[in-house]
Amino acid sequence: MPPHPSMTQASNDKSKGHAIALFSGGLDSALAIMLMLKQNIRVTALTFMTHFGCDLSDRSSCGSDPYPMAEKFGFDVKLMHLGQKFIDIVENPRYGRGKNMNVCTDCRILMLTEARKFMEIVKADFVVTGEVLGQRPMSQVRNKLNLTEKQSGLRGRLLRPLSAKLCRPTQPELSGMVDREQLEAIQGRGRKRQLEMAAEFGLEDYPTPASGCLLTDVGYSNRLRDLLAHTERLSFDDLNLLKVGRHFRLDKNTKIVVGRNQADNEKIMSCRRPHHVYLEALGVGSPVTLLIGDATEENVRKAATITARYCAAKRMPQVEITAREEQRELKLVVEPARDVDLSYIAVN
Ligand code: SF4
Image (cartoon, rainbow, N blue to C red; front, side, top):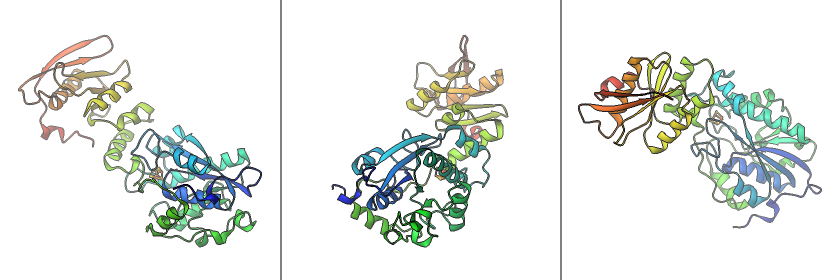
């Protein structure tokens, strides 16, 4: 279905104002943008990426590819990677964590702060989000919405069009740039009104609401918690490795990552550095195991038994495992580890 004629980007000269929108590619942020385009407000959408999902290269994330919708409705999208700034809040969240390792309040403040800075640079008028009052317990209750508005420096310039009629009027509404009457009063977790609006605007192919980024995942959170307990600063390699394989902690300095499949093995090898020892059973289907930390004789042997446990020869009494470092190669003949022993050191 083609977009409603009123739903395409106003040309710069005709627009009544310029909004910077947080855009995940999901339905709510798309509807917030539609409500602005309908009022002849020019929109520049920002899609944020992090190492924890909400990332175009990672479909486990909050949103989805923003480009098809932007192209269809004719608004601009800019990608912004939050990189180290996001890692800093994951290490030390000011406003605590959710059920798992998610830092939703700090995350929203960071994204809104970056949006404000961008708004100031391009001399836009205000910021728009698809947040809905009461939709998410941690980040979208009224006091959290007020907090994120204040802490991001956006007081009065943060418009949440889907719940606007339930919130204080913002500057663009007070100045008449945006007609408050044409905004919405949606509250809670229901999707009925959003689905009606999607049909009205000709919005199709929007993703079903996702539960959040990788920080909301129990297994990922367990691995991250373990990493934070044993590392002073998170590195990009550390974080990339958390997304793959089975993780086992051998001692306070040492962990291993064991590939579950070929894709994991390739990712593990791409994160390997020259000083790392890696192990595999040659000649049979085998995981690649990366040893990170102290490559003592005991740890290499333990890693070999675990590699043997997950290779295709796991039912053999003994398996030959090859351990390699940059210049060295070692052959070890080991018994595959027993599941009962692994359960004590698994970090999953
Ligand atoms: S789930 Fe929370 S921490 Fe993760 S991206 Fe969404 S708001 Fe941010």
